[in-house]
Length: 116
Image (cartoon, rainbow, N blue to C red; front, side, top):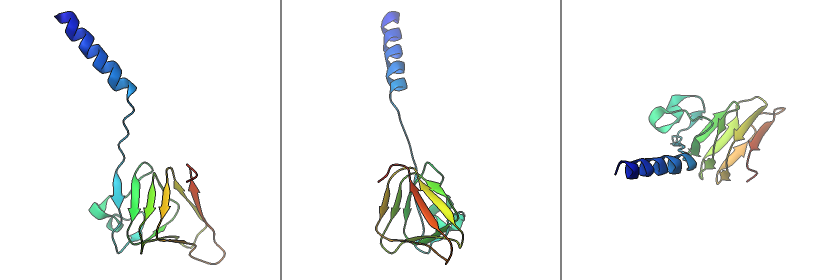
């Protein structure tokens, strides 16, 4: 009986070690939007990090941030803050809104790591 438990738990351990579990938060902007780095821009006051999936629901300006997947809903906007910056999406970008360069003489680069 002891041998059966040992085999069961060993098998369970091997199975759990071989499964890659990736939990990423889905963070929504408020409809009012605001600066990416401000807690009041985000529902529940959580500023997204590089591994978070982000959904924009309003105008958000960035100074060169990073997220995992980025979705711009209709009536949302992502723009730079009068500087040349690079925004990085480590996953997919779905643009149903607007991405714009905010300022003459500056560049707004969006780097998409997956190419989609």
